[in-house]
Length: 318
Image (cartoon, rainbow, N blue to C red; front, side, top):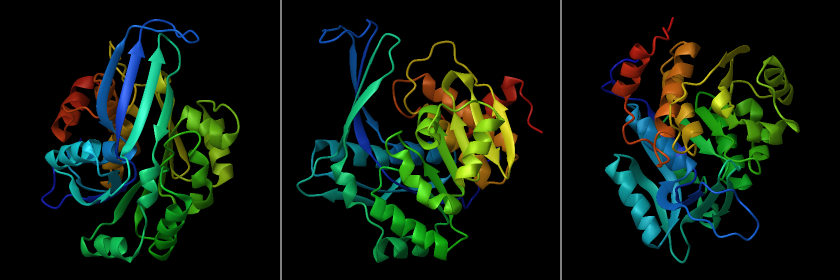
């Protein structure tokens, strides 16, 4: 069972993207050059932002290091993060730049497509001032997404190599960015991807079985999470493989953010040394809650709610 928040919660720094997502959806099938009736939502997004807020809801002390432009979107994101209680000391406003924007389009049963503009994230570096901030604030855990530049990732993992006690969670982020992580597999404490990102890393569609774990192991990855949408999740920790079906809500509203929610729930338990099966079920509960909202983070998610749903689910945790 999840314990109540500690007086001194775990401090975690999320380094990566904060963005505004323009989400367009139509129930009509996509046809070339067709106009379709549907809905358009403007919501705050980004892996870095989503992980930070989810982890804050789950009782951790979350910090964000990212960059936004000097525009209304940047102000919007900063205000939202501060309202959630996220430490924004390292959220930098870059003059003359535009805040990260994602345009997501989906129709009927077609797979969603995305166009993004994230140039401002190249301003995220890992210099002496960031290292000083980490050490001064006694931060021992980092959450990274692969939107970071190769140069920044190299600097972070050089610091990790010199400080092996630092815990690093690496998010694959997207199929085109996931291969950036391959150079650092021995330094990643926990890695998360979805089935499409896994395919980009493995060079083939992953099976939801032991063969997937073996292929990641052959690449050098250790502890991994692979989410398979409505089929469930595969987790490997210390060489043991766990395969769990999802907690499926009756009506899925939106799938975006569910993977980050799962990772956040799992990570909360993992950092608190809970049994792996407990960590998986925390993650599944968080993912389910996110599937029920158009937002990328469920405003109703909390540590207490996860505990309540876990107790009511009938899935005992040993």
